[in-house]
Amino acid sequence: MSLEEETHHELRKEEELRVEVAHGRFVHVTLTDGTAEIFGAEIAKGAAVKLPGGKHAIFTWSGASLTLRGTPEHCYAASETPMVTYANVEGVLEKRREKARADDAERALDDARRRAVEQQARMAEAARARKGPDAE
Image (tube, rainbow, N blue to C red; front, side, top):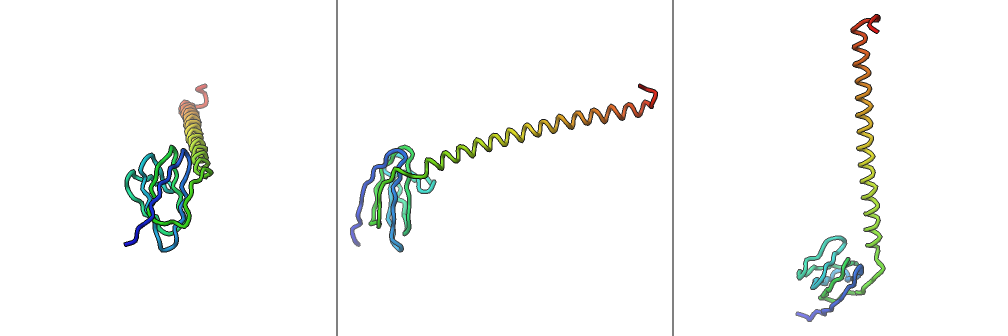
């Protein structure tokens, strides 16, 4: 059994650790402190996550300490990530959804009011028709 390289990484708020693993190989990452996620999936503190060959990004919103076991092709921290932009876009989309729901509710209320007025008009017309032409 060969000795695997173990490295420790400290990520600051809104940083990500980018890890490139050779095809057919893997590394393990363990969250030792803070919170972090891999493509939106939260990493449990203390549990080793196996990263197969490919490119991986481990992001933290509030800071994290990570231990990497194995030998990646490349491994570096990056402060310029798209995650904050993604979160901002999600916020804008949620506000638009809320507005659309409110607009739909307002349209439904307007439709209900219109139907009620139309029903009242039909009922009044029917009542006049039952009384005959001289009833007015």
